[in-house]
Image (tube, rainbow, N blue to C red; front, side, top):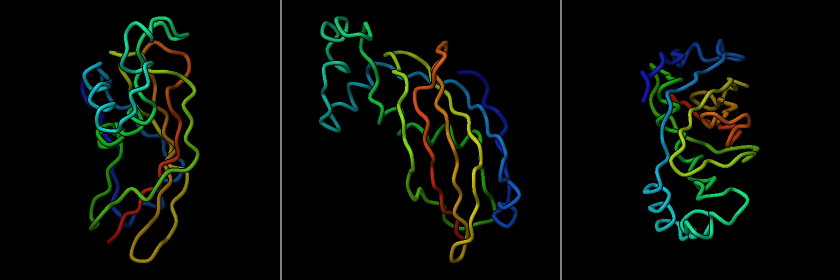
Amino acid sequence: MSHAPSPVTTTIDDLQDLVGAELGPSSWREIPQADIDTYAVLTGDDNPIHVDAEAAAASPYGGRIAHGMLTLSMVVPHLREIYQVTGGGMGIVYGFDRIRFPNAVPSGARIRVSGTVMTVADIENGYQVTLRLVFHVEGAAKPACVADLILRHYR
């Protein structure tokens, strides 16, 4: 893994100033087959494209690929590298809008995340922030995932 970048850091009271800010990219992180297999067991998503080497080799992908939802779930370590809010109380993932998976992540490939702060809105006792995140696959022209992450930061 390469050295972690410096995150865009702000206080909760200065969040409004981040609209339009570019985040990242994070460092690269591998998605090994062992993680794909564990995810398949945990979720029950044992589609052969993810876990059966022979079946996946005969697919248009030519080999096993990570689950899209596994890729998306790896957002936390990447986000911690590129975005930090201090001076608040609790922060939560409120949800996602518009999630797309335009490209596969081959088993063993590396991903990283970059993003843009799209909106910051007042909510009771804090702010709601929408980040447009792009999950890049090393060496690929198209991203693996593009999603709008909605976070809530409370005082």
